[in-house]
Length: 515
Ligand code: NAD
Image (cartoon, rainbow, N blue to C red; front, side):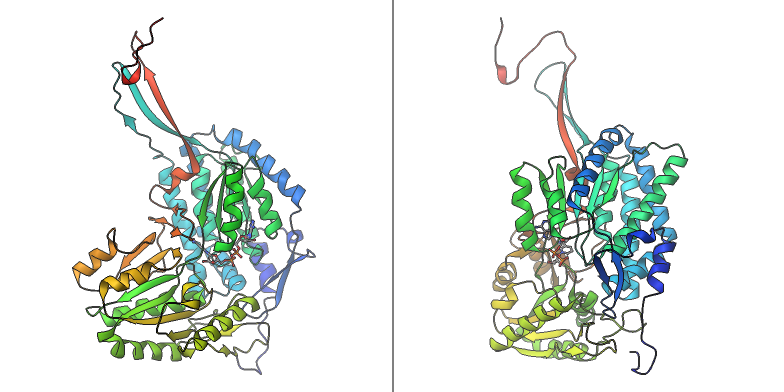
């Protein structure tokens, strides 16, 4: 932690230097109306020019025109563009990762990890560009063949949250581009700089692609800077057949019906209220590490953050004191300094939401360890808190909501079937874990009567997904899936084809219609 007499930390010189190295034009982040700030110090680090609504509409129309050409480029060639994007990300991993840390307040390894995730999805998408497989289907008619083909869909609108300011874009962008779509991105208004930097890296990749003889139309990708009103242009635009929106459940509740009203498609990736169950046979050293990372990492600001912990009565009094100790001692402070594991909350509103949830829990009789504001030496505009461990008797009130801050509610249980019911009795359904060495418990948790979440893990915490699996959750988490497995299908349109290579025209289901 910096001493109060050392020169104050400021990113005033570093941020413009990083942006310049990443290829962002200075006009985009000087003198604009949108103030970008670093939660590490609370200072304003850039003034970014916003995108007007008419300008946003024009960018979407350009993207649609670009899509009409891009869909004709063979998919493996489209993969080559994504391969080059991956190369740019590899070359600039440290710079972009550092900018993520400065703009969001992530510890250094997480800033780099976010860029690594972008690289990983690019690699995945490059392979995928040769594997957009359809089926061959048996037909009941002689001398006929049926098949399923996958075609590009159109402009993919991407709305993203502050907490994974660039990885979420890449999950969508890499798949959408190999699928043959154009992309238009509305990043969080809290993280415009990492968005501009990412856009500049894609731009470099596009230039290299064209220099190699690749054909990529202008307007294939656009970034719209601004808040909800700019996002709404994407949501309502008839030339955006797919809106992939990541953020709070409140946002999804607004966006989902609007896109549906024009028969557009959505991929909704919304809030989580993730739980883990600690059973009597758990490996407690491993469990402690898993719980601590999942609950406190990224200062509790992951959609997959562990927020509810059910601990079996027989091990509660041996396990929970160890957890309390970790909460009392975890280093909180400047996330760029080695050794600190918990950085700042994104802003004052996040701090106030955390304090309000803790007050509600205390009023319900909970016992709270930590949770107070910490002075990291950066003054009143930087919001550092000690993560809170809240031991509470019942799953009610604040426990049923997602408060986007490091609060872990701990509840005792004694019956396995009852705890499964409790686990599933919240409106959200993103990620979940069980810590056990009992195969019956593990398999039951993963079975149809187990966790109702999109992600269910055994002996690892709920946070920290890899790109190979489909990512997303059920219920108020929105039901969307992104990233690996067959999530790519959501970015394409499916056509069923029947081909008659005979000389007669038999009808299906034995229908006769001879004229
Ligand atoms: P937020 O909902 O405040 O904002 C997310 C994005 O939606 C921003 O770009 C915002 O400008 C835009 N937006 C908000 N209302 C809109 C509207 N009506 N129309 C169009 N755009 C609109 O979320 P946040 O505070 O940035 O992020 C935190 C939330 O995101 C948490 O709830 C977290 O769980 C969730 N999240 C979910 C996932 C996931 O994959 N499930 C991943 C990351 C974050």
